[in-house]
Image (cartoon, rainbow, N blue to C red; front, top):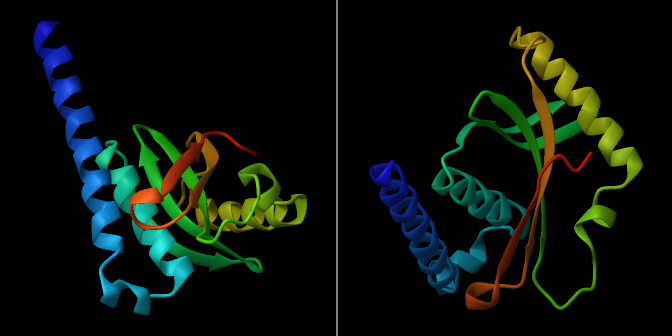
Length: 146
């Protein structure tokens, strides 16, 4: 029991340190050459891995939509939409994924489930909202957002 607490605390410290280093890494001049959306997906994938998730797919396109990340959170298959904003734009993550976009992602997810014969697996749809840049960046994970 005490060892589980210690392991959890060390995992949290590792995740926090990784997030801190990520902010500095993103400020390197050559990182600006990577497109904003692609950079946001890379940041989100690292964020999820640090929290113990397994990223099993990226940019899955089907049914007129693209799913940014597909990950496993324990036994749950999670389809993740990543939204990235750098400038001081005012927006809410819930508003960033409208009903039309949600329906497209659901259709693409059903195609993914059929192709990979995972119809009986529990599924969840999450949104990761990334705002700001460098050390001022904020990452928000909205679990089961639609």
